Length: 341
Image (tube, rainbow, N blue to C red; front, top):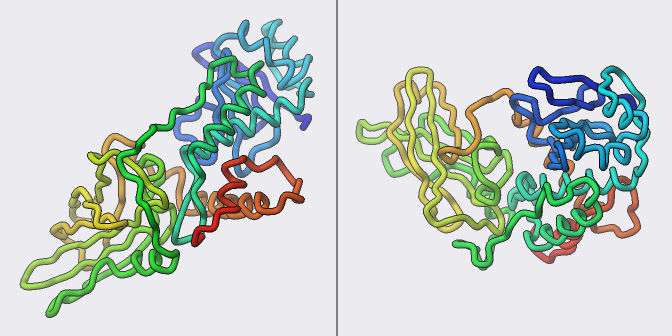
């Protein structure tokens, strides 16, 4: 877990301690695989997919952070911070077990937001209350670091919508196929399917698969429309007033509409913008959530996260597998569930 870190000052005076290439909370648009832990006097971050064992730290209160800097980065780094030095140093954590627990806590917080539950891809959801237990237990283990700074998230007692039963994965794969049965006499001009930007919707709303969204451009009686479908997340729940929207783009125009829930599928139909016969892109989003940017969190990163989730669930199903960090209780429960995943 030892490694090289650089100490430097940001333009606003914040202190940054980071291995080369590690993400920090000062990044303008971080990837969706970044684990973030609010610590006393600052923040710790790791890359879930590519990052080193050592975290990066952004410190806004050196006095508070000194309570844990030596444990996470070692005495040499803590003394350099106290002396106001900058430069390259070797980090040797004073309490490596604490660093492991801190990363697991950051991962548990990450999983509460980004876990890619999918009926279509066979990735079981994590039980929210067990995840809350994981966060509470790890927060106690990391008291030296968090000291109340990163409180466990709240789980509502009675969510507005909790489906009592779910279909099988193959049923949802079919549902994510052609957006609708073509009406008699209608002409299908184009169709497609794909994923959605996880940053644009709150968690537990839509299935995380790259095949969760489908659409058709249909011409009938002189009118061209775009029909869109999106599969809900397994064990989804959300406020009754919350509706995802679809933004249909062509080279010549756009159309926007809210989707309506029909069973476990969100659907809508919108007048096709000019040019829909040749090239269409479809984006699902919730107004006010995330930002419309294609630079981060794309299909390749989402697939790596799905692959990691599948791997972690396989490990969680095998108590003898001690490789890497230990699975969360919520992962063990998901791996042992008798669902159709």
